[in-house]
Length: 216
Image (cartoon, rainbow, N blue to C red):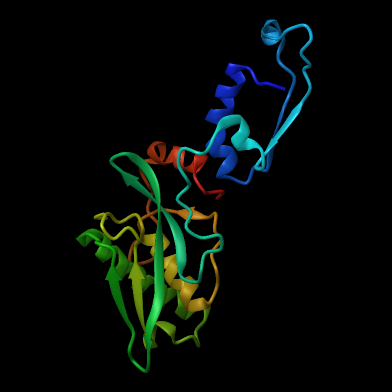
């Protein structure tokens, strides 16, 4: 069945929500009464199932791809949310252990981070050590590990305190050997005592939450 131009436009608007989220198929219902005049008498109004196999035939190729980098996030990798001049965006915080030994605990930062974000990373490191001491008292990870924390897209300057909770989650994922859900994203400044402060820019982030690679 050939789709009307009006319904084709609606499908195009739904493209990102369909392709980049967990929706597996869309069933097109018969034409509404006010569009019946668009059909010829001999045209059927059957239902058509549009799924990931035939979506391109109806709406064309995606204009852009979601910013998800991993099908399954590795240990120490967490998705965060960010405000940019062009609107909301997602970014990843990555941590890995680069050296291990008695008393070698340290934090190395890369990713062209500004001063505020560097301070936020230091706070995240301190808070993570405190949390791990409570959750897993016998785990000496932070005391004996040099950790490298990186924020990808190194050519792009980044600053601000709101990645604090994402950094903590990334560090604890590495220290406790636990993966973080691939479709989970977070944002929020964290104080030295572990409090997460209220966030701003929710309206800017809303399109990312709606059409981006995020469920939670």
